[in-house]
Amino acid sequence: MSSRRPALSTPWPAGAATSVGSLPGEDPYAALRVVLEECPELPFLPELPARGPGAELIGRGAALLADLAADLQPSGWRLVDRPGLDSRRARDLLARDLDAAEEVLAGYSGPLKVQAAGPWTLAAGVELTRGDKALADSGACRDLAESLAEGLRRQVAEIGRRIPGATVLAQLDEPSLPAVLAGRVPTASGFGALPAVDAHVAESVLSVVLATVGAYGLVHCCARDVPLGLLQRSGARALSLDVALLSPVDDDLVGAAVEAGTCLLLGVVPGTDDSLPDLAATVAPVRRMWRRLGLPPELLAPAVVLTPSCGLAGASPAYVHAALARCREAGRVLLEDPEGSVG
Image 1: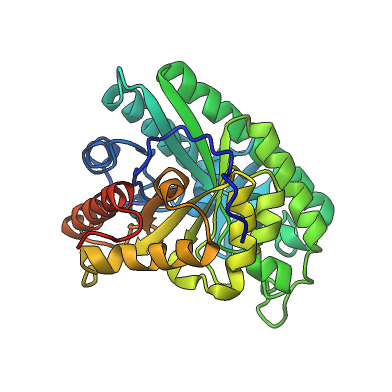
Image 2: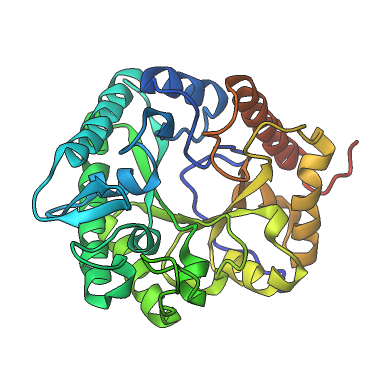
């Protein structure tokens, strides 16, 4: 791996920590106060799936769609001709979250991360008006992606209006992307799988969404077989990954991404109640990976943000505080001692 210095430009300070996006509970005001307490250098607009339909990943993505509507059916979210009760509820929840952000973050200046289902995860989770998942129809996939991109662009602009000091980061959550590329997404009947999407097509659609949103774009995928090269080429400024799922086999792609100026948000603690690794064990896999990449130690903290490995919606409030505090402490350690020469 080359030792040349990557040209990194980040809206967060070196050594920052954050979370993937979801938290437990139903109160957006309380959740935002937790975010500001535990992730002050890179806060995020939390998702609260415990509120029910419309607050979870796919329903929230449906609420963002511009000039398209989806309603909840027994089989899941489905595109419909006009908004129904569930669609209106999902959009109302999103509006309440923006109201809470405007109040709790009044006067805030700095980076603020928002999250949304990515175009391929949304296409794998939303059904067509009649028939199978949107993923089964290439034209529907593009329409859905364009609608999502425009809706997310509007949300970013609205946050900028309400919180003028915020530099908005737009995170696309793509947990289904590896399955989309491998042809592992089940049909509506469950007896088969939809055809794999060509990697060039997947990259092109992601590129359009990231470019349309007009914010600092990043992509999160906590599944195995993350298509690292595809994500980096799509124009993502940062990749959010579970460090435990990265191996030496991935080093060339990870190193190439960092050398091209792509930052990493690395999951280093479990996302559900578990025994937290101690501080040394939390930073160890990140240091090991960085040594394998052969990149300068002083670039570790600027290039890497520490997070839990996935969303925290299923965790207890006490664990949320402990996990985010551990990420914050570990980020400080990597900033002050990237090579592990102390302790």
